[in-house]
Amino acid sequence: MQNAFLAAVLVSVACGVVGTYVVIKRIVFISGGISHAAFGGIGMGYFLGVNPIMAAIPFSIVSALIMGITSKKAKISEDTAIGILWSLGMAIGIIFINLTPGYVPDLMSYLFGSILTVPFNDILIMLVLDIAIIIMVLLFNREFMGISFDEEFSQIMGMHTTTIYLILLSLVALSVVVMIKVVGVILVIALLTIPAAIAKQYTYRLGRMMTLAVVLGMILTTCGLYLSYLFNLASGATIVIVLGLGFLFSTLIQKIIE
Image (cartoon, rainbow, N blue to C red; front, side, top):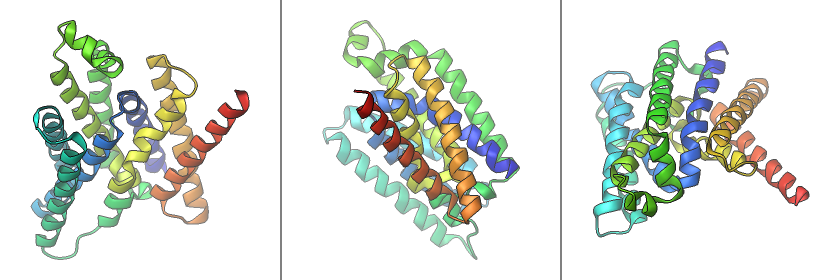
């Protein structure tokens, strides 16, 4: 439970900070594509006999860059490119797992999450990734804000918007890796978007939105963790349901206030 609580806190930092950009920039679908493509890295990790989380890091970043470049440069529509790469990532992961000799342990935890089984080594990886995410956000805060609110104006002002966009997608990829063990590849998109979506209902100031999203993520994720432990439920799914109920409750409050 101590590891699970630490994982909940670390995941909330990533989903609050990066999720804010995802919601404002409206790149939820491409974030979902990155999360599913990350399964290819997990399968590769099993096949090579290394920590699947470590293998998922470069695979997720490469997938994010390919999706970003394809969506910007290719002549096919963005959703078509993402859908193709989304499916390819999952297929590559399945093939690698199929080629891995013997029984593949903990596979379901990477698909649907298992916060109660997160080892301390993965906690350290999450911590390092969170630090990297925070450093990148501090370094490129003005640029990220520019492309999130008005990409065309930022480009006119001389900003290399495509490069900044690819860096942002790389941060999304790192955030996905942080969250995989908590809610799994299938449910990552909920944790990445719901806390930020709730925070957006109360403020449009980017810093406040990030802070509120991090706090909400911590509260709701911890509540989901506690309920899954109390009622012996699947942790990842329970956390996502609590997040969904939190968003519904917040929306109802906003309707009442209006």
